[in-house]
Amino acid sequence: MESREAKRAANKFSRQNAALGAETTKFLGRMRLMVVGLRGVGVEVCKNCLLQGVSQLVVYDPTPVAIADVGCNFFLSAEDVGRPRAEVCVPRLQELNPEASISSVEEVSEGSVGSCSCVVFCGDALGRSELLRWNEFCRSRRVETVDERGSAVSTAAAISFVWVACRGASCSVFVDHGERFEVRDANGERPVVRLVESISSEAQGLVRYVVPDGVAATSVPLQSLYQLTEVVGCDGACEAPWRVSRRAGDPANSFRIGDTRGLPGYVSGGVITEVKAVEARRFESLASRLRDPGSAWADGGGMAATDYTFAGQEAQLHAALVGLLEFQATQGRLPRPNDEADADGVVANAKRYAEACAVVNRGAGRGALELEGGVDDAFARAFARHAAVELQPVACFAGGVAAQEVVKCGGKYSPIDGFAHFCFFEALPTPPPPLATNRAFFPSFPCDDSAFATALVAAFDRTWMCFVRFTTSAKSSSAFPSMTPREFQTNIDDRSSASEKICESSDWVRLVDPSPSVSTNSTVVPSSSETGVPHSHNPLVHAFTVAPT
Image 1 (tube, rainbow, N blue to C red):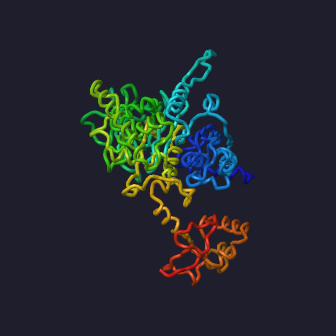
Image 2: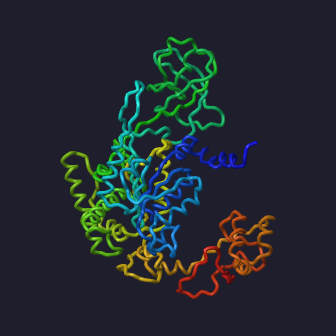
Image 3: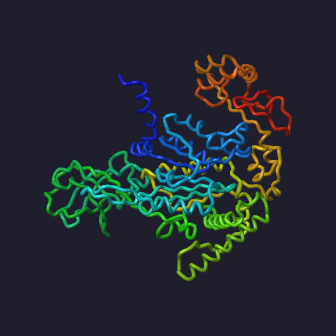
């Protein structure tokens, strides 16, 4: 009889297998991943990858926890201040996937990086020169193998390199899989299936087909291979997949295969099934893509188009990023939040970069970033003001994108070709907050203060959100018999039983039964609080009172 553990292991990734394929899940189970930098975006990458089934994770971040880290890394608390980030995060990451092997290293060395399948550099854990060095190391890795004659040969085996950084209300992701990377399935869509109607006998046999009932009548991708099965007649046509083509004037719902003149005539039946061809992709280095990020619309690919509303915004963000990296390399730090003098330095660097690119493009026709109209001063300045700020919502988004790229190392779906820049400047206030100063009002959220101003963050702090799920299930009713919100708070003083009851409900929300004291037209507000005074947030629940709207 199959054990409970075996059933759990078989079902753990059943939905993931349906979406990504069992091959991808197996690849993640063999993968060894290294994440450098554990602020907000770094811990998001770790969390996402562990939940996807990565079995070996190595982290690096000896930086002592600061109170500001608590606002963007959900694993940290005020009690962790002063301890190394990696030391604090490793045991808490282990809880997400107890079966994974999670460890930390004291330095980023060739040994630690060279043992991994993929390395993700997060935020500003390393400067530009170090990033360039490790990118070249990852691209140039080779492994010793034995050929069919028993001779030792050295073959290229690049380490997948991902760099992700959050810059206030923007973020950037860079991906490099080396000189040759194989994509097994570029789009993840179901293979095309058609029913054979006829096969002609000629130098390029014409296959006419019909679309089965219940199947979308989409066009047949010509770049794929197609396998014929269950064909009566045409002996030999089903032995291997065919590469297909079309001629001008060919009828609809048809394509051509190879020479069919030597095959017996077609009789009846047959199924056409797409066999997705493996695509070999070549990636450019970080140094090359910093100079010329390319374009998704140009030959050779490159920088992804991420905003179809504001044309050219990705190029503007790339120029600002290059200006920021130059500022960091020369000043030894990132620009101070909302410091106009530092912002001027980043803008000036971005303009020099744009001018140099224009000279290269005029002389060589193409070879560097094409920036129509030059650098947008206002855009680059908005980027520079918050380049040192890491906002938790942006880190959550960027960490998800980077984790997707880690999953794509298995060859399923098309990876980002170089840079992908994302911008959310519409969320920022106008005018920007004044020059940031050290303040103790929101010590855990100085990044939010810098980007959105203290007054707005104070308004966030005074906003209390109550998530209530009304239920009549027997299990929930027995867990919380006739509880009003106030009674819920009274009974939750027993922290151990409260935690158990919340877990039993399988809902990470406050769960209460319908009660006359709670109306759908009521506003739930915190009790014992004064406007403008930060609250002591209980990690489980808050005390509730019901106030009329």
